[in-house]
Length: 310
Length: 302
Image 1 (spheres, each protein chain N blue to C red):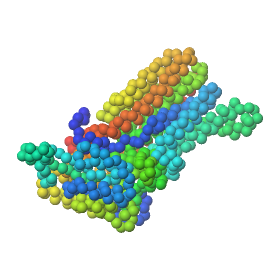
Image 2: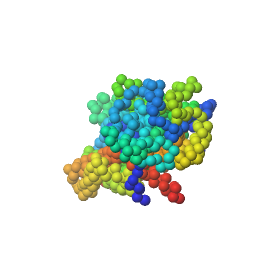
Image 3: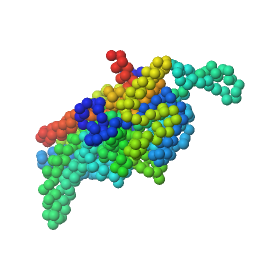
Image 4: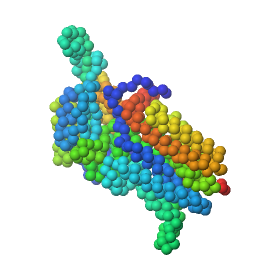
């Protein structure tokens, strides 16, 4: 089971190419997940009559999806050609699928958030904003329906590459990212809402931490030697930071989340930061695994040896 | 997304071309490559590819290093101490001391060279083409994989998707064509359309790079391997010629004299999209879990 430590390469040069993506991409993964989780909390708050939570989460969803989309466009080699993404719809391309989800999701959270802004306008203007106010609930529910896809497709996007650490994690990445999204949005809900209204945010955050941690453990178990890349360099630091923040945030939320506004604020912040660290750690690990030919060659050689052995 | 058979019969017809000439490809025979790099030069000249580094890599006669956005042919050049295992190819006396004092000792230390010209494989199941979100990457009537540079928006997804590390986003020089856009070998689409041979194959002085109908090239390669084996070159093997491999067979395949990884090639490449249905199922489950979790978070009374 342990792969051969000796492997051959062409003068130690990489076999596959690392993605040309910069920090924009893991930042987008984080912001997209945050937006998705926020829209779910907003929709739930809307239905159950939690005005304060609804308002905070609608605004947060719009801000994060806008920032995320900006990061995505900024990372393109030709940002002016962003709209070429909408020439085709390809189920074989997770990026194409994700772009279409994002394209539908963005305007929906835009409408829902506009209604919150309209509500604080002077009275004469409120009449003008009436269509937005009416459309807010259906738009918010539509966004929530798209949110699970938005939160989990990014795991498929990374898994669907020849980058050793990402591809080896392709079964678990969508779960890690869905958990991470719940953790981030729950944390932000705790920060932006009074403790009385933040109950669903706390519960979503706790569930998110559990899903994220369990899926991540399982992922490391199935990654083979490429799991090493999560335990070296920047990825190691990010992963450790993420774990510590998630553990602290979880403890604070469970112990004092219902009583202390300050602890809610701190715990929520820790969970948001933990989610960001996870995304950057996994991104970093993949880049490392692509640059070292061992992670490409050794598992493939092992696969061949197993086939021959049979 | 679902293919009838993983090893597609004719990728051009499968893609929707109604009339297509026989699938075209390269057979690169590493046993007769002399490492002259005429293919690299011809490719650069014909395709107007910008300069991408003139540094010394200090590893062998190869200062090109790897395929990339502005290197569409790359001659791997492996220098090894010790005689070749099977014989049958270059075994040279090595000069270890340039002062000339130690020639007699040096002759005892034989070395051998391995050379082979690498290129885009034009996979039957091409990951770059599958993951491209703009439709810039396309399958031509010749069964090859080509980028439409004016459509590509430089998202970079094809770069980590390629199991061979071939395709890359061109990052410079600033005044070059197609900067910010993914670039790779086109199998000289323009020349093929005029019934011409691709520039690298045309320039190859030993016919190590052979261009033609893929079926015919595969037959020729089988005969060549048998011939080499008969001459005692037992290390000779084909790479990328099997339609049942992880990429459904390459349009550009190779005859190698050692394991693929020695030449910088992955020993068992698999198109990543083969696992995509499984990934979408995982995403659907993960999304459902998130939705259920969010709903449950609101179920309890405050």
